[in-house]
Image (cartoon, rainbow over all chains, first blue to last red; front, top):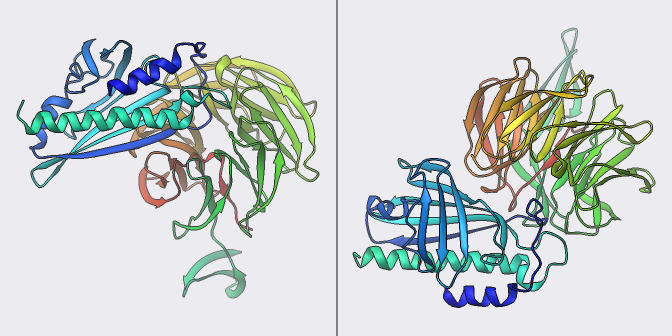
Length: 177
Length: 324
C-alpha cells in the first residue's frame, strides 16, 4: 500500500492540475470481494462507520462530520501524506450497504476523477462476503493520457486500495482486534 | 384494420383482420434495443419481445452514444476514444462503415428525415453535422462547453443541446444551422428531451440533482423538478417522465403536466441511458453497473424484465429500433 502511494507520488508531482469539471472519455469499474469468517453484523460494526476508516492500512486519520447520515463528510489522511475528501451519498444499515463519492478529485493522491464507491456486506452461511465496488474515470481527462494517469493506472491504483483494504479488514476481524 | 402478433414455434406472424377475414401479413419482427457496451467495445441487440440479447456487434473505441434512424434501417454510434463514428446496418447487424472523426464525440441525434446526423464534440465545444448519404461534414456549429445530450424537436426545426460545462441549453435552428438562443439551466446538464408539441424541454442536471423545465417559446427555465442523486437521462412516455438517477440507483417518475415527481423506482446499480418504446407502454434503461437492460412498465411503474448485455452499457441516445 505504502509503496503504491509512494510510486504514485513520484510520478505525479510534476503534473499540471486538471480541470475539475472535465473527465476522461470512459468510466471504469472494478469489484473486489473477500469472505470474512465472522458474522455480518460484526463486520458492519467496523466498515459501517463512515467516520472511522482506520481498518484500512493506508489511512492514518479519519476526520469528518455528520456521522452516518447522507451528506456526511470525511477527510482521509493517508500514510505518507495526501488527503482524500469523501461524501456519504447512500447509507442502508438494513442492507448493510454504504455508497460514497470523492468530493474533490485529488489525482496526486489517487489517479482517478469522478470517483464513487460502494461497500456491501452479505451473510453467507454465518460468514460475511464483503464487496467493494468503485466507479471512476482516469486521472487525465483528455485523450492521450500520460502512463501514470491512464485507464490502466486508475484501475491498478483502485484495485490496490481495495485488495489491501479488504485483506487488512479480514485480518483485523478474524484476529479479533 | 386490426393487427395482432402471435408467437408460435419461434416464428412471429402478424395477423391482420379485414372485415372479419384474417390475412397473413408475413413475419412481423419485434422492435429492438441497440445498447452500446462501452467497456466491452460492442453493441448488444436486444429483442424487445423475448427480452433477450439476440446479437452482438463489435464496435471499437469505447462506444457510448447511439441513434437509431426513424426508418429503422440504420444505427449510428459514437466512440469517444475512437477516431470515427460507426454506421450499422440494423437488420444485418453489420458495420456498414466507420466515418473518420476527431476523438471525443459522445452525444448524437438524427434529423426527423434521417438525412442529417448531429454529433456533439465534447472537447471542441461544437456540433458537427454530417450528411447520412454522402457522409460529408456539412457544418460545425459552435455551442457552449462540452455539449453532451441532444434532442430534435418533433417538428424537425430545432436541435436542443445540453452544454454541460456551460450550464445551458442551446437551441439550434436546423434550417440555418446556427444557434437561435441559449437558456440557463441547472448545473452540468447532460440529457434533454421535449414534449411532442415542442413547447417544453426537460433537462437532467447531473450536479444539482434536478430536471430543468424549459419553456421553448419563451426561451427560459420555468421550474426545477427535484430528482434522485446524479440524474443522467430523461425520457417521456405520454404524460409521464422517467429520469435515471445514476448514483441513487433509482428512476424518478414525474408528471409532465404538473411538473412534479410522483414516484421513485429502485433499479439498483448505475442507471444511465433511457428511451421510450414506440407504443409508449415501456421505457428501457441501460444499467451500467449491472451490465443489463431494464424494462419498466410505464402504467404500473414497475420493473418488469431485465436482460443481460455487455460490460458497462451506456445507451446514450434514442436506442430503440422500430423494426420495419
